Length: 143
Image (cartoon, rainbow, N blue to C red; front, side, top):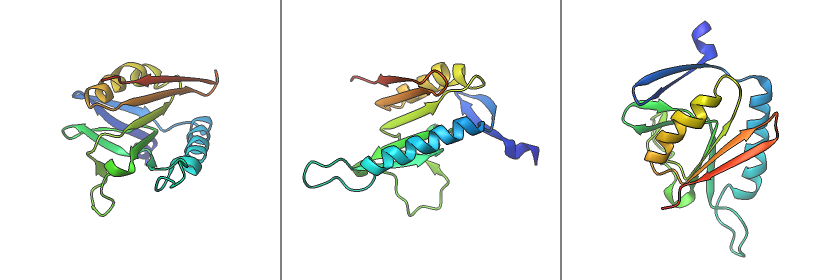
């Protein structure tokens, strides 16, 4: 049972085991997903309304071979969204947006290691949200 309380990611061959997030982390991620989903999920509006995104919580991304990376939130523009009719648990298409909710146990991992993998995969938008400090840091890959 204890293994179920940990997340396993592999960043460039290095296995990272991190504890399941605390309640503040889960609540923050859920609230952000709901708020963004109201405006961005589904097809794009015909009158310039927002939309055109597929947003997911904790998708298992395989961006460098079989090594899993699991962001708190990820999003794809509808035209690039992964096929939902597959039996795979993993997503192989790099997302257009990733958001990590930072906590003391994962901050260095998200700020350095995961950022490098997402940058190499061409993920154009990477958000880092500090719930306690109420700070949002936005990284944008500018080609």
